[in-house]
Amino acid sequence: MKLFKIKGGIHPKGRKEATSNKAIQSIPLPTMLRIPLQQHIGAPATALVEKGDLVKKGQLLAKARGAVSANIHAPTSGRIIAIGRFIAPHASGLPGTTITLRPDGEEAWADRPPPLDPDTAPVDELAKRVAECGIVGLGGATFPSGVKLNLRNRYDLKLLVINAAECEPYLTCDDRLMRERAEDVLTGVRIMARTLGVERVIVAIESNKPEAAKALRTITKASGDDKISIVEVPARYPMGSEKHLVQTLTGKETPARALTADIGVVVHNVATAYAIQQAVCHGRPLISRIVTLSGEAMAEGGNFEVLLGTPVSHLVEQAGGLKHDPDRLIIGGPMMGQPLSSLRAPIIKGINGILALGQKQKQAPPPMPCIRCTSCAAACPCGLSPFDMAQRIRSDELDSAVDIGLLDCIGCGSCAYVCPSKIPLVQYFNYAKGSLTAKQRADHKQEETKRLVQTRDARMEKMRREKQEAMARMKAERAAKKAKEEQQKQAAAAAQNADTETKIKVEA
Image (cartoon, rainbow, N blue to C red; front, top):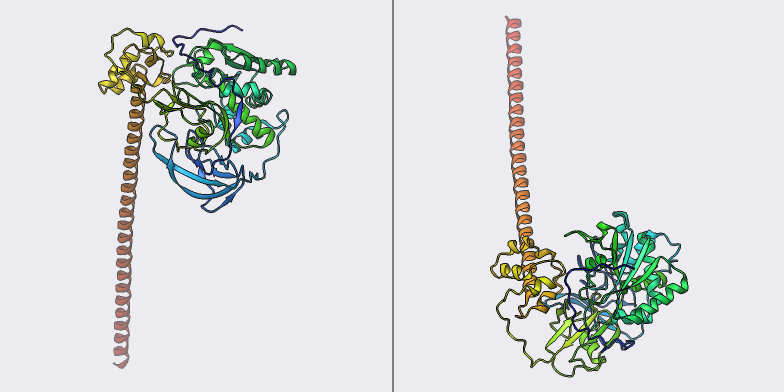
């Protein structure tokens, strides 16, 4: 199959050899599970349980709220001992609303929905099952998969791309998943293809995972399925970027601020395909995922199937602990991952790796002035000018940075990786995007406040006007009543005078 070259990109050291040959392992139950209500993009789920409730494995704990949200289920059976604020697995370390579950060790399942036939079940029923089971994109985006499977209703879709590139260094969880559970993965791929109504499927794997590609090819060849192609793409970071992967496979460039669906292509992560197979064929909600533990400070790395809500500290302990204090603790890969503020934070749906990198004693060299070498521009896969954007951000000219493409930056970190002056370019961009988001929220809040004030003023004016009208109406009614009474009084007086005159005439 012909592949198309994309602009930019880098070749960081893969460092996957530390865990790529380690099979997926399970770990013992922790003493406590912390289950945040925000494990996906969109609105947090709404809790359906209360403190003291006994729950079973797979029971619905929190219901999706809004169109872009996801259900959350109990990872095991036990008792709810708290619902409150707890450390979120995020760089900010800010707490989020979390359900705390104490496992009872029974692993007693709740009633699960019956299996659906992937080949005959109505496609609406398949998408509904995926949504009910709380499945989100497991590559890190955490967009609700049920919503994505319904894109067939809005777009003319032709191609499904399964993102199995796993281009971030250190991470091997998708590699091991494909090697060990290839048949289930491909069943999930077929379910997605049928639900989306696409004519063709490409499973894209970086060329540094030959065993995974071989495992998938063996299954597709045995099944005689010619609709699915297993394609090895160059190991060039960030090949796993959705739009760049589509461009490599099809030669089509997704327009800025548009979706790949606009050019007829939908992209799903390979781990999501496996989760969908589990939901459709076994009625199993998303209560666990595979996570890679690696890094120079990790005593024993590996790939582990972990219940959602498991504290990172428990996972690291089961993997042999840390050899020494790490320089950086990261959620995800080293290029696009986020710092982990505390080992007490739980594993959630979007976490595919925990990395303990380097030694704490080693301090990063301070950044030097930009020498205008343009290496960052050459490495940028989006064709941007990172040094120019950073300069405008440093001058607090955020709108100007937006004008030259800040919002098109995918935050891959290629620019910072190649910068000889070690300028933290991607941190500038993340800061600027965060500031813009905060400004948009503030503007939205201000507009909402203005709207509420205007609504209140209109309501008060209406009440004042209605009150005035009521008073005028009452005044008119009183005046009419008074006039009527006066008329009646005058009529009575006239009648009395007439009677008196008549009586006088009779007597005369």
